[in-house]
Image (cartoon, rainbow, N blue to C red):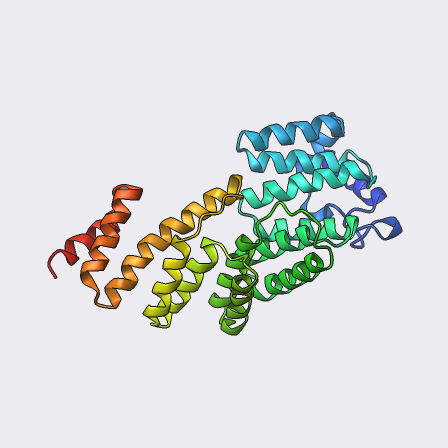
Length: 290
């Protein structure tokens, strides 16, 4: 009975029936994707309580539970689309991304673009989500749109590091065989100074795959020379992971170049910096016999 009642509410609100709501507003939740838990919560709690519950669950790392609460909050809005609903969508997108449901996150950012208007921040986040979802072409298109929008409004402040997006989109393009496209956005980022450790590490890995070890080594060295004093939160963690990978990859590149003494020193430094590592230790043991 709850399901039937929930579907009546959705139909009246215009959610997911024809793909959009009255007045040209997009459907915030597709009817076929509504969970019974969200429908039940929407009938039992008010939308503000549900939003707060979702935020609390995100803080606790319960992203799946948070998404249900956010969906329920939208259902409890009974067809309204305003600042509250847009705010809930932002949280839902963050929860979907944290849950690694990148396709869903990209879709939510598309909804936000339709509701709030196009902006570089949403396009970059959409590009990042699409790249991690494996949609190389879609991620490249979203990135280019974000780049264009950022250029038109150079005074806007972005909370997402552009280097993170370039690295993810470039990696997706490389894996999809769009090598020229990946190299293009990498080189642009280097030229304008926005390339961080992730970009150079991804470039180096691409050169490793094509056996261009000297060029790969240059990229890994460049990655390790960078420190971003303005990075915060998740970006700091991602930069640190890129630096760790670059340090290991540098040793591998030196080994392929038969610069064994330097490779041994690189892996020893890696272990001293990042702690015991089985793969690094295997390389050290091998190189000590050279």
